[in-house]
Image 1 (tube, rainbow, N blue to C red):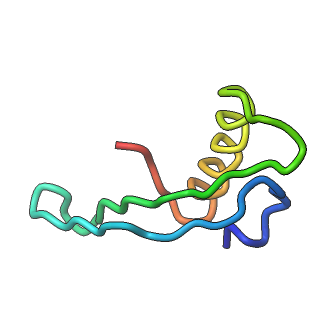
Image 2 (cartoon, helix red, strand yellow):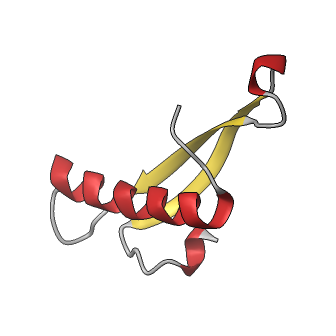
Length: 68
């Protein structure tokens, strides 16, 4: 799903850990690692935050994901 986004700085993403607990009910907690890189400049915090905002918006819309 993330590969369909037009985010050239998002080079890769992969799950690191999945956590399940009775307290979460049917939900799962997923840790995801993102590899972000620009070949044109050194990334500023604002660049990374803008990219992650786009990623989170897509995950919320497509997967009903939320940050814990």
